[in-house]
Length: 431
Picture 1: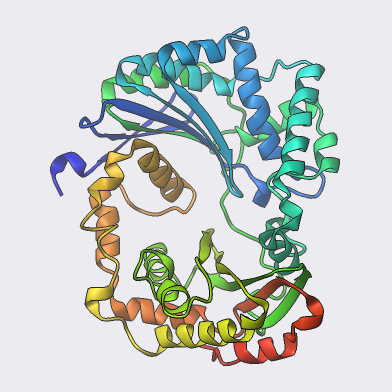
Picture 2: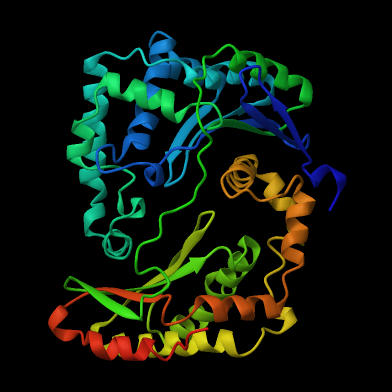
């Protein structure tokens, strides 16, 4: 990897205590500035479910108000793009533009820290948009929503990022400003800058950020309340009625026993690429499905490893038995060294540096939310290069057990023998 692609971290702190991280890459022509906020459903309750997502919406509407209603025209004139996303554990506001307009971009994004000056009509309009988003997303009909409600009942992971109509209706302009001060408090806001930006450029951002009022706060960590059945699932099967069949295999992760690089690479072996194990065995060889989707959701203490496949009604038993056999295969023998997915993280690490928005999210998330110790792209690559086939095998032994595993299904309840499916899962011996 060339020195240009090492992306060495430089950390500065504003006068009001907000960290700013720079990962400079002069090979690029633009910049990406992100403001991250430690807020999301894992810090919410039934009364303010969806508050972080509502704040995401009103913060941008408020930014437009700060600019007298000319924000979008200003962004278009400068060729900039402003985006925002709310996750379970954070909000990310990002601004991308040409390197020549960094100073303007820095001032714009820092104004997200401004107090809310929206009228009741403004808030009501944003409320209506969020309720439309809830309606149009049809989230309640998804298997992931059913799984979260079933497996994490009584914990914030059962909440919806979007909130509910009831919780959204309860949020007034005053309550949102109180929540903004809590969410964007000391220790809970930080900036990440990537692209063709040098240390001198940061002075503009630091000055703009230092001018904002940040209220005292306690740094929030992404530590999740465990449900009572966590790690003691017993291979249970839960069914949501539907006239088609989708299977979701989900496994509890104890992140005190597993690492991010190992779980990333284990997921890749199973699902990423044309030669991945599950795509090859379920789709290419047998035609039981066209594709398989999955995710690895991780927090400081726990996480969830899941994958979903849509199948024919008559193929459920075969797919479940084959899935269990493949998981047991991963546990029984280490992979050949040549099948380890090092390339995306080691050989092609510089490709992450080529995408300033991906770099921004990756370092912003891993550095501050997951508390990973990387200060350079080289250090991150080394962490993956050190993963061995035996590490993946041991992770599979820890993860893919009956006590960690659950199967949730969308299908015709009368045609699904849940006891038989649970019996198939019992072949996943506990570690």
